[in-house]
Length: 218
Length: 218
DNA sequence: TGAATGTTGAATGTCGACAATATAATATCG
DNA sequence: CGATATTATATTGTCGACATTCAACATTCA
Image (cartoon, rainbow over all chains, first blue to last red; front, side, top):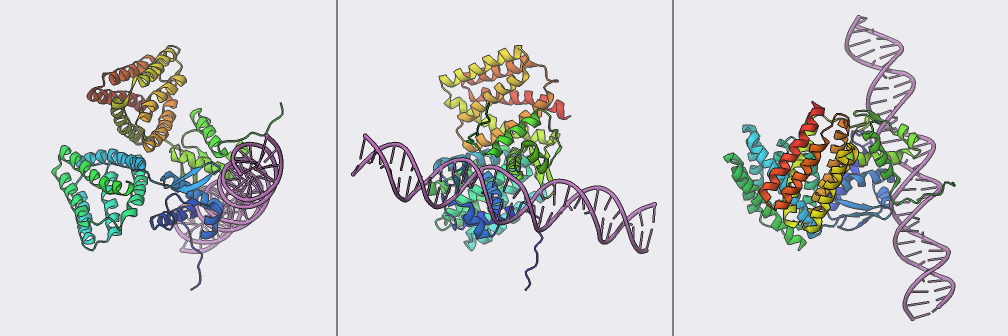
């Protein structure tokens, strides 16, 4: 019962950043909404300095935009933004998948197979949230195989953005099955170990996601 | 004579970040050196909060590394790091140059020609600093043509890192002429408007820079 | 002697307050 | 009455101090 002193490994600001991210995903904070440091400080019961540092973290992820002496706002994603995100994703993933073809071993394939198996289950239960987590896990795993920490960092931020945009269409988005199929197809491509095929499948997959994207922005 | 109140458009932290960056480039701060917030605050005559925000900016550029409750250090660039930087640069630039082929117009070519002309002058005077500025300008210009603000942001950070590493070999680096020739060749490639040729020349150019890079790290 | 454990000093994390600036609301003038 | 100038308020930028944590050293005991 007693509220024990919590020992923090992470700075408080990072925890706040996580919470803010969730609030955006849950639409407790809306796109374009202004974020008042004072207000947030009171709400989370921390100082403004801590809030400021948390906002910087979100700014790196481009989830919020702040202008000097004007304030910080939850990002809005225009069609232009979405096009940019997709282009960047395409660049990183096509490189990563081609890279992966050369380096993937048995255990890597097992890992991806396990993920798609889970996807199948969640797709049947139409659990969009879990499905999306698995999608992120799938793609992250492949990107991580590249071993380039800078690219991985960029990709992580990018995924946060993608998730933010896609969370917007959870209720509209219904093709759970085809979402699963897409990943099975992608995995099958990797198994061929044929660079050309993989490249093609990755681009096709991203175009598939792109369609979903644009149905929101448009 | 009177020290007038300076009106700042930018936050102080950004100005501090610029100065810190220069200090690193000028080797007033060495790779791996620990940065004490208190010390820097006193040195720049600002508060620790301001220093902290400046360090976050440099952290995004991967010019410093900070570990929670441990401290922040000027980055060190291992061979692995340099390989990562080169890979990322290659990915971004090859895309950007191919993109540019389709969109470049007369004035863009004039701009690049003006830059290479200046490079020739500076190469003759063996002014490595200026030469490098022009190199950054040349490549930035092409990347900016892509119009993808996210990629541009990433590229800007990347260039800071590249510059940081290359500044290390100013005295060792002597092939000014070939550095200039490289860019002329690159520009000639663009003029052909042949995607295949451009791709090849970009990769060749980056390999050229890579050699210089690795001579430091190794 | 050496490993484990306290102790101390220094540096980061966090805080609340003040200063500078932008937005708004109001007043003034043509 | 509309447009501009002025004041007022709200919000970000900056500051210095306190709290917490880490690393190095000293101390104790096997």
